Amino acid sequence: MTRSRLVFKNGIILTVTSIGVGFIVMWFNAFLARRLGEEAMGLFSLMMSIYTFAITLAISGVNLASTRLVAEEMAFGREKSARRSVKLCVFYSLFFSILSSIILILSANFLTTHFLLGKISARPLITLAISLPFVSISAVFNGYFNAMQQGGRSAATTIFDQFARILICTYLVAVVFAESGIENLIFAVVLGTTIGEMLSVSFRLLLYIVKKKRLNNEGNINNSLFSRLLKIAVPVGASSYLKSALTTTKQTLVPINLIKFGMVSTVALAEYGIVQGMILPLILFPTCFLFSFSQLLVPEISGLNARHYNNRIKSVISRIFKTTCVFSIFVAAIFIAYAEPLAAWIFRRPEIAPMLRVFAFCIPITYFDVIVDSLLKGLDKQVAVVNINIIDSIFTICLILTLIPKFGMLGYIILFFASEIFNAMLSIWTLLKTTACHFDFINWVAKPIIAAGIALLFHNVFLFIAVFFVILFVTKALTRKDLTI
Image (cartoon, rainbow, N blue to C red; front, side, top):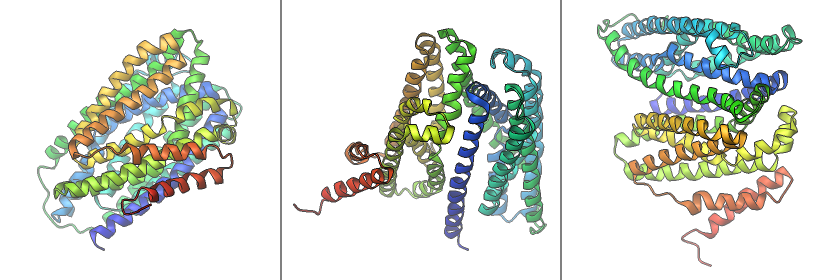
């Protein structure tokens, strides 16, 4: 199989897997929201933001190091050296993941008291700490599968991960801890997550052993593997620490400052839980389509950039921008038009529909930023992406400290929109400056908005979809340069 066909095959596998897993995760998030309630979802979201930083420390860039080391060794036919790379990455991951686990365990009481508002004990965080070595080792095998262009194995591990975690968590929440309080329900979810990570690394190890038996034992061991591992992983890990620390700080400061505004802790956590645990996962769900699409953009744009096909890059970016704008404005209009039935059907809480409708207006900006970040990475501007995210996090933290204590949830909504717009503007400006592309506001933004505005007059969802795309088709036909009227 040629490389182009292999890339296309892996792209199709990634797209189908991403969409399928996206539906499963959305269902699971809705299930948790109904079972746990707003306050518990707020606590759980805060806890997962802390856990995310611990994962960043545990991985410390080893996923990228695994991918690059294995890919480089296999390119020179050194299969024995490629296997040695995996072993070194596993030892590296164990060091940082055990260190991360120890830090999280030792700081669990402090974190629950000051950042989780003393609502639960340290038991859930300690349970999550146990999972960190398994998460880190899984990252090593993920990097290996990516380097070997094994799209089927990557898809299989992704599907296995989600099914294992969701089935175990659902059983523990719905059966074992069904009649328990907030802490036990949260503990059920984190226990299921930890068990799921243990099963996941076992599944990856099995797939690795099966593949390893098919490789020959030829080639010399490259003595520079460990130094190359450090050269790749350490800088990536260091930058990810800062980015993740700022993101975690940003998330944990929101309920604390809602309390400063005058809310009692229960209400502050409930409001935070509605946004972080219900609304944002729902409006971000359609990005599973964009995610698979954006993953394919990186190698495509990288190849064009390497060959200096600047005009071709401009043409591709123009089509991508237009497609993204049409898709995101269409999705935003759907959420705006049908917020009540969506909130009632998915979460059984129609009262959150007004908030859902407000956040839906930010969808085009958020989706656009996802695609622009992927394009910048394809153009070898990943450092710029990291810097933009760091600047945005600092900007957002400043807004949290100034707006939320004065305006409460209104301040949170304002800073959310301000942060998304600020990040997107920096990313778009960097991309346009890099490629010398021009932003076509009329075709990319104005026409989809007009189509969505007219379609909003129709209350039937099928008529809405039909009218939206018919109007886009007609306006495109009327503005063709070769059409005379």
